[in-house]
Image (cartoon, rainbow, N blue to C red; front, side):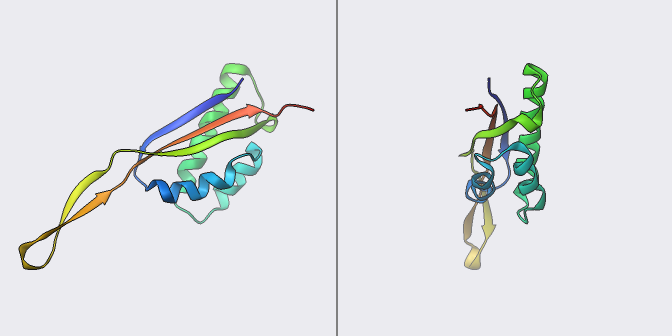
Length: 113
């Protein structure tokens, strides 16, 4: 009984997003929300929204309380790269790669041992 949420085409590099996602993986939902809220990284706001969406899906589909959930899996995949040109010296151009990513968060109830 796990629920997921995916944010696609987020305009941030996957490498930067992975720094935040790696911190919340395996944590309880309450702790993961705190990490996203107090992180200095700009992408932490987006990761927090994806986490909230996964928790809302779990509540809507299976009537699970957020206190009983934890982040089972969280990962960042690379999305399409937008290619742009920037003017350089002598009439030349340099390629600018604007990267995107897909952020996936899966939450599940913590199993009692």
